[in-house]
Image (cartoon, rainbow, N blue to C red; front, side, top):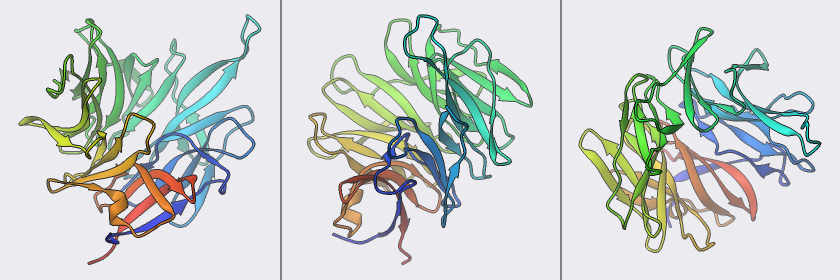
Length: 322
C-alpha cells in the first residue's frame, strides 16, 4: 500500500452525525454538503473552508443541503419546508432551490413546481434548476425559461459546467433511460455501452472542456463511462463490481465508486491517465474505508465519504507533494 494522499476528516456535528447528500468540492479545496445532526431526522447544510466547518443556518422547521459549490465561491442547493396536509396525514414536503448570500438562504422561485433543486451556477451566474424530476429551468437575472425538449422526454439535470453545458438523465417516450448533454438550447441524447441486453445510461458529471462521465450498462453489468468527441468509452471496474463515474476535472481525472450489488461495501475509485485505482490502496489509514469519491478539483483533491472508525464521515484527500 502506498500513501499518496493526506486525508482530512470532516465531521460537521461530531461522531454521531449522519451524512446527507454527496459532498461537493471547488478548486480552493472547500467542501460542502449536508448532514443529519444527532437526535434529528432532518438534514442541515455545511461548508468546510479548509480550516473551519461552517453551519449554514436554517430557520425553525426547515432542512436543507448544499449541492453546488463553484470556483468563484457561489454556494447553492435546496431547502425543504413542510406544508399542512389537508387530508390530515403527515405534512407535505416542498423543495426550494436556493443560494447562500450574505449569511442567509435566498430562494429562487419557479412557480407551479413543488420540488426544485439547484444543480449548477455558471460563470455568468446563470442557474440551472431541476424541477419535479422532469423539467430543467434556466434562471438568470430574475427571469427563467425551460429547456425545450422536442423528444417529449422527462429530463433530470445532474451537473453543469462553468460554460452552462448541462448533463443528466432522460426518460424517453419508450421508457428507456439515456444520458444527455445540452448547451442550454439543443439537447443531445447519448448512447449506451454494449453491456448486456437493453442497456441504459446516465450522465452525472462534466468538465469545462465538455467531457462527460456517468454510468451505463444493463441490469447484470454496469460500468463507468467517459464521453467525448470520439464517443463513449468504457472505463472498466474492479473484478466482481459494477462502477459509476461521478465527476471529472479539467485534466481528465475521473472519480466515482465501485459496488458489488450484493450488499458488500462500496469502494471509492480514481481513473487517471488510463489507469483505475481503488483509492483505499493509495492511503495508509487503517481506520478508514473510502466508499464513494464524489468530486475532484483541478489540483487533484478528492472529496467523498466513507467510514472512519466505522462512523460515516466526509473526507478530503490532498495529493502529497512529490
